[in-house]
Length: 292
Image (cartoon, rainbow, N blue to C red; front, side, top):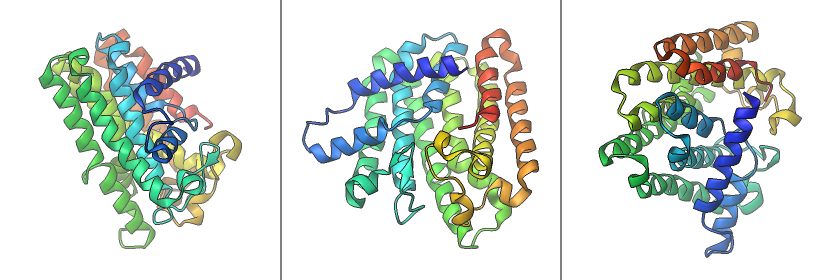
């Protein structure tokens, strides 16, 4: 799995380098900030999931690289905005100073905005390569829905309200389902949406939902027990910020159990795929075994 993620990361990084505007293009400061944030490291887990979903549905992963890059772009945009002083006020991300620390808050906001827009530009511009227009539009709509008020943005609002005690701590599964899970679910659905395998959309949707929770619960656990050098960000930040997390609400050991349960449910959901789901199953197991 490490080898798969490394190879997927190389392919996605090469594609991102060709899609992003050069750092020398005006406005230079904005494009520098965009590239700084995109290439500051990271696991490339979400784009790798897009490639694995495509392969499971009989597609050539190479053809879906624009979607994989789009997913990484919106993920990076979310991290830039999440780190802002008005949000989590984080100064360290992926082992580097955060975008607003390096380039200032205004440029960081605009860099996130630019990446959000580029993501949809890349998907729509690659329409002929990705497949029939109606399928490409469904992927774009699915991604937009995952990012909206019912998904990532709405989850971020609930997360902020939970810190202030406005939303009860018991909402943590719903917060994480929206803030993290919806985008991961959208990644898992790319394969069946682009291939037209409607009969497999339901199982990959369920897989993505369980995988998203397993991923975020593990992130919560690693914030408590992980090593800062491996994570590339400060540990203990969730507790310091009074964030509502699975370890805080359910306890550390129960949180670990819940992550494993969600990973097992993800694997069970793709049983109908047979051998074609092996890579996705290994990815689910990796999510809860990782140390960064």
